[in-house]
Image (cartoon, rainbow, N blue to C red; front, side, top):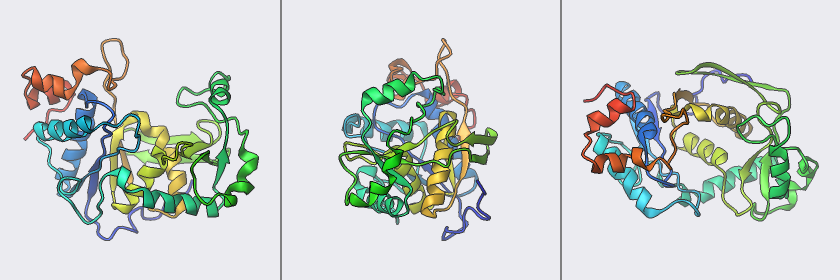
Length: 295
């Protein structure tokens, strides 16, 4: 994939814009503290703007109490942001569940450009794909059963009722240089396959929503966990298909528990709320998460 000559051409300003983008599907933990503190300090070092975006797309898993906990935990750590659901800003709304119109516009654009197709594969189909030899450990490579339906896309006035998959250019190498992890290369069709941009239950998928929102909010650098490196390759394809600018990327190392498993929201004992309630100070929490620059 050819990098854009200037990834910030579409920015109205050269001013650094970073973002915090938690999802209220559980309590934030030490790994989140590391990533969000990194985003906060990088924006502060650039004297830039930090955007808070509530990524609450999943109606089955997102809960109001987790939204409140996100704000409380991050402010307790000492973070402040310049734009967000609670402070407003020029690119509101900063809540993904209120931004459906923007995602629909992107879906229509992808449909009209012949980039996506309707997929009716069952869970059984996908489970079979997950057990196939080409499973990469990220998400199973889609077997391509519905690829022949690309020509049917124009018959759908709205996306609901089927999955919508982005058809990747098989064999193309997608590359970018990550500010933390260095040069990255992924082969479309081998490292990842056709991916979902809109779910059967009429919910836009993560890949589409973040691409649309990062462009609309003029994010210059995306700071997130290293588990999303391969997602970045997918998102670069979406940016190209939609004619959107490419931000810079900084993927933080992941924190692991004593068994070597990366932290997840199920690690309640290491949640920021639990640590805060146990009497830990922000300095102690950030020290445990591997961040020592506080102030």
